[in-house]
Amino acid sequence: QVQLVESGGGLVQPGGSLRLSCTASGTIFNIYNMGWFRQAPGKQRELVATGTKVGNPNYADSVQGRFTISRDNAKNTVYLQMNSLKPEDTAIYLCYAQIQAFAWGAPVDYWGQGTQVTVSS
Image 1: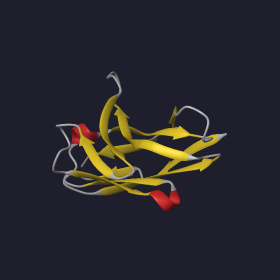
Image 2 (image 1 turned 90 degrees about the vertical axis):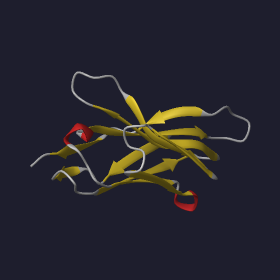
Image 3 (image 1 turned 180 degrees about the vertical axis):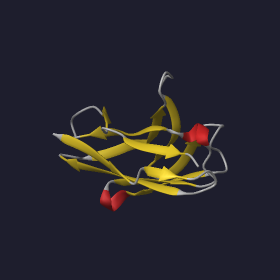
């Protein structure tokens, strides 16, 4: 069984910064894509940033230049450094990982429970 656990959300003023972390645990042979999506009230879930084991970051246009995704492959952890936060960044941020549990198995998509990020003065 695989589990993704996020941390680091909270309340921050506009222009502030937060760092999210997400660690995968359980039976893991390999992790392919790993990253973050977000969902604001009344809106669809949208990609924020994802990255592969060797980098290749992919960012939403709305966060390009403000957010940075990074991974610690030895710890099965992905981070999201969020700078210059805006009220429109307010959402539940969900960790995503494409995980292969066994060498002979196919990768499966996993999601964390989410962490709330609120940007408000």
